[in-house]
Structures are given as C-alpha cells and as structure tokens.
Image 1 (cartoon, each protein chain N blue to C red):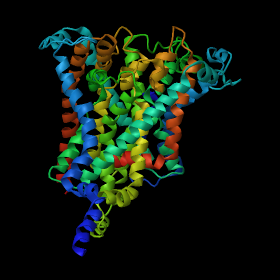
Image 2 (tube, chains in turn yellow, red):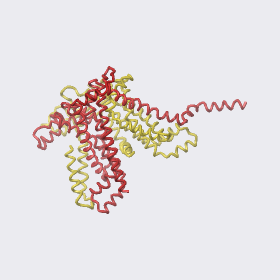
Image 3 (cartoon, each protein chain N blue to C red):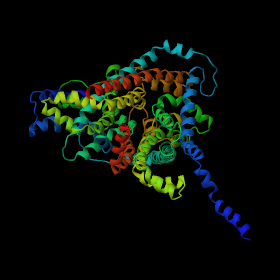
Image 4 (tube, rainbow over the protein chains, first blue to last red):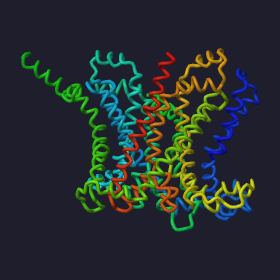
Length: 300
Length: 318
C-alpha cells in the first residue's frame, strides 16, 4: 500500500523542480493532482468496497477466485445478512449500541455545554486553568485507564451493564465537546448577553434563550462527534461488558461472530457493513458540521 | 391595610424567584455549571488514573484485594522478554506509522488544497476510514490479509504474476508487524489530511504570489512557506497522533491479538491480556503505567520540538 502511494510522490517532486514558473498545462495537472488523488481515493475506499462486495457474495464465489472474478459478484445473495439479522443477536447489539451512543452523547453534551458556558461566559478567577485541565483530560488515553476503571465499575455494581458505558464514555467526549463549544461561545457577541442582562434576564434564561440557539451549529457538531466516537468505542466496551446481549456492535462482531477455525467471512463482513452504515449515514447527513468541527478543534 | 399587603405582595413576587435568584448568584451558578463535567471527569478519569498507579504497586487480581508490594511488578516486567518485545513494537509501530501517516496525509492535504470539481464530495469521502468503527475496518483488513484468499496475494500472483506464492501476511512476525502498520496508516491518513488541509487554507495566497515573483520553485515554496506556516498545526496534530498510535489497541486486538507468537503485542494489548483476560490486575496496571513515561516523552518531543522551530521561523520571518 505504501509503495503504491509513494511512487507518484517521487515523480511529483521530480517534475516540479525543472520548470520554475508553473502555468499548469492540462497533462501536468492530471499527472500531479488527479492521478495521485485517484490512487488515494482508490486505496482509502477499497476496504469498504471489499467489505460490501464480500457481504453479498455467496460462499461458493467467496472462496473460489479461479472461476469467479473476485472483484465482482455474479450471483449476489442476501444470505449473509439474513443469517446476521435472524440467526444471531445482531438486532439486540444494534439496539444496545444505539442506546449507549445516544445516552452518552446527551450526557456529555449536557455536561460540556454547562462547563463551556461557565468557562467562557461566567469568567471567574482560574477559568482558563479549568479549561486547560479539561483539555488535558483529552490527552489521557483509554488504554491506560481501562484496568483501574474496570475495578471502579465493579465497585459501583455497574459491571456488564450498558449504563457503565454511558457513564464512562463522557471521559473522552466531555473534553472534546467542551473545547469545541468554548470556541463557539467565543464567536457569539457578548453584547447580546449584556442586552439581555440589562433587560433583567437571569443567567440561565440567557443561556437558554440567547446563547444556546446561537450555538446550535456547535451543538450539532459536538453531538455528531460524540455519537460517532461512542459508536466506535471498543476497549471499554470489551472490558466492561460480558454477556452477549449487552455487547455493542464492534465488540460483539469480534467476540461472538468470530467462532471456530473457519471464519464466516460473509457474515463477518455483512456485520461490519451494517455496523458501519449508521455512522456513515449520520456522517453523510452532517458532513459539513463534521469537517468544520474537526478543523475547528484543531485550530484552537 | 396597605402596609400589610405590600410585604405579602413582595413575598409573593419573590417566592417563585427564590431558585432563580440562587441560580443568578454567580459563584453558585459557576459551581453548578462545572459540577457535571468536573464530577464525571473526576470519578471516571482522575480517580482511575490514580487508582491505576496504585494498582501497579499491588498484587491485585480479579476478586482479590491486593497488598502493596512496591516495585515488584516493575522488576518483573523488566525481566520479561514479552514486555520488552511490546515496548519495541509499540515504539516501532508508532514511529513508522506516524511517518507514513504524516507523509501521505500531508501530501493528500496538498492535493485537496487545489481547485477541482466535486472537491467537497471528495473531502467527505476521504474522511470515511476515520469515522467508520476501527474494529470493523480492521476486520476488513483481516479478510484482506487472509493467508489463502487475500485479494492482494491474488493480484500479485494471479493477475500481475509478480510472485508465485501467496503472501503470509499475518502468520510470520515481520510481515504481520508491517501489515498492522499499513492498516494503521490507512486509518490515520484522513484525520491528518483534513486537519492539515484546514491549516493550509489559512495560509495567505499573497505569500505564494510574492515567492512566485521572486522566482521560487514549487519545492522552495513548499519548504520555505508551507512548511514553516504549518508547524503549529503539525505540532498539535502530531502530538495527538503519537499519543493515540502508541496506545492503540483496537487494530492489533482485532487483527492479530498480539500473535503470531506474541510478536505484535503493543503495550495496550499486553496490558489487556495480562490484566483483564488473565485476571492479574496489578501486573496489567503496571504495564499500562509503563506507557506513561513514553507518552510524556513523545508529547514533549513532538510538541516542543516542532513548536520551537515554529518560534524560530516566526522570528526570522518577522
């Protein structure tokens, strides 16, 4: 993969140096921009194509490259998806994942909106430090925390319960959302709030009637981000959930569908495809918010 | 009459506002606003972090409270070839994957910074590998790396006739290590590219125009304008990338689970294997804690290394 992508890179540099004043000709543009771009898109999308095509292939075609062209399906089948939906607990896993993702998204949106408002708008002594502290929390990776967190979860009696995940996911969602929302609150003119204060509105009224409606794009970005991140979370879900019915989709596919020595690639890929679809759909609806939140957070 | 009604009217007015008034009292409001976030982070982040360090110095197992045993866990780890192996692979994995991600991601960002039709659609497509659950795309890679039915082997053997035998991607240590790194790079490119694209778009075109007038080549423009202007963003993105690559868990757990013969264990997967699967919480915590010095070092190195250069460049340019 790396080799394929690296080759045009060399030609890129080589062809760029000789002609100093570059009035791009068409051929040059194709060579320097469209060709490498096409390679990138091909490589970045190929695993998804492969995932999709595998999930609709009958087993006979799946394991026989000599007689069937592996890049295409001659007789598509829904057998793998039917197996997944009716013979496994896949719908339950989807439901659990949805529940966990929505629950933790709302919890972290609630917590981080209030925190961002306090840090950015109520301004108190030390508020920048609180902001920095919350930001630093984002740098603590889950891989360091999952073992002690597992004992904490057991102490709380939440082991093997989706509630544990809803409570734990905000640890990485709140720092990100707070940071994102601080940026959004900053962009709302302070004068609007002052006017409301003069008119006798309370702080909470200002937050609810003025600041929040203006920060809706930020809330949407933070919400989408939280939803995808909690949908994708793996290590906590793997460590804290034991019973099959309470597992989230990523964990369940890996631990419940991978059985024995002969892997059912069709069902595995169908499961991966279905598990990716909700986030992909969600993402395609809000793609602009997504990109802006990603880039906005980086610019901070 | 009027004297008695007035206070009662005042009370009637004040009564429903009592809570509202409390919430308008700034210190109280600040505490209330910060409570949920700080509470969650303290209980589920700060406390476990401290607890993890404590556990690393005990012999706790699942179901049994441990006692303080000092540095025994760490002394054991220092003598454990598997731990050294995991340290080596974690550093190697992070190093190669970061270089790959940033080289390819920067290049993709530069490509996306040009004008062409369907640009926003392409930008959306490019992010896909990053938003899809890692484990699920890792499964796709597992299938792509299948010893018998790998599509890459098929291409090389049956279509291009470059090789005569299938590649054993995951069965032998070194190919397995590089296969995982390739999957990690694949997943990391979009994030790097889109973040850096945001940085590229903030660079004023007038700088390039001035350089063109001075006769700078494309390489010189990249080297003396784009790169220095990108340093602050590069520093941040690289810090994040290094932290999350070094502590990566999902890809390795999904594709190889540390095999073949423990050659692809990262510190995180080793910690999981010992701590959760094996039940030795104390030892697992010690492995997890042993990641912290590496992380601190990597963060300081990438952040201050790059940030200092940014500062020097800024001084020179001004």
